[in-house]
Image: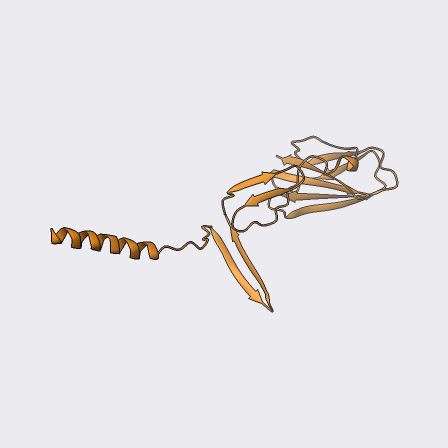
Amino acid sequence: MLKKYIFILLFITSGVFTTAAQSLSPTVLSSSGGFESSGGTSLSWTTGEVMIQSFSDGSAMLTQGFQQGEITVSTAVDEMSESAMDVQIYPNPVNDILNIEFKNMVDQIVQVRLVDLTGKTILTREFSDPSNTQRLNLNSVSSGTYMLEVNASQKRKVFKIVKH
């Protein structure tokens, strides 16, 4: 009987020590990250974190997690309805020559930028006072998916381009 009490006492005592060894500090499981500090400023970053939960009320969004970075998203939709430009592209998918049709863009300087999906700029062109259709030679561009960004007079439009 005494052995039973000793065994129970040892079992409870070992549970207390194991519980005391637990840590409640936040930890991050990610594929990479780092921490740098210089001159009173510090930067801590990670990649590959899983988003836990997001809440939105229409005007603001809160994402719950450990470290949330800034994410920039480019879409094929005008950024703002008042920034609509009358620009069309064809053919898409394209083989060599991409036609960019500008309508009602007299006396404007238009900048066109082709970007790959990693964000690297492949080519840029500038058209001053573009007339109806401009041709963009993509013969030297590798096959793949790209984003074509058209900027004029503080207006912006982005198209998804597939090059064969």
